[in-house]
Image 1 (cartoon, rainbow, N blue to C red):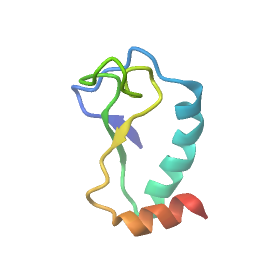
Image 2 (cartoon, one colour):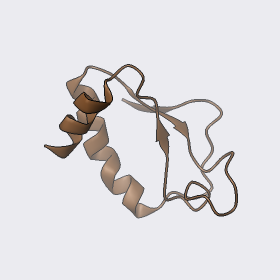
Image 3 (cartoon, helix red, strand yellow):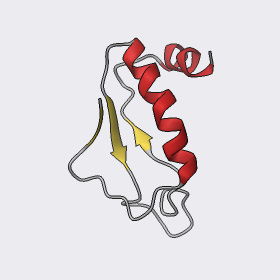
Image 4 (tube, rainbow, N blue to C red):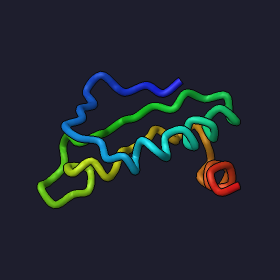
Length: 74
């Protein structure tokens, strides 16, 4: 499942982000974890990529960074 924290807001989300979410979802499924978006366009300055829909933050504390990187890059 892909879910968002209740406070997450999106004023825009670029197609590039949508296109990688499927791969991210599959990587999280390998670890039997939900993919939780913790930040969208909310809470960032005017020049930040989040503000323009080019970035999101994901909760990854339950998956080691090396294991997640391996799952995403295979």
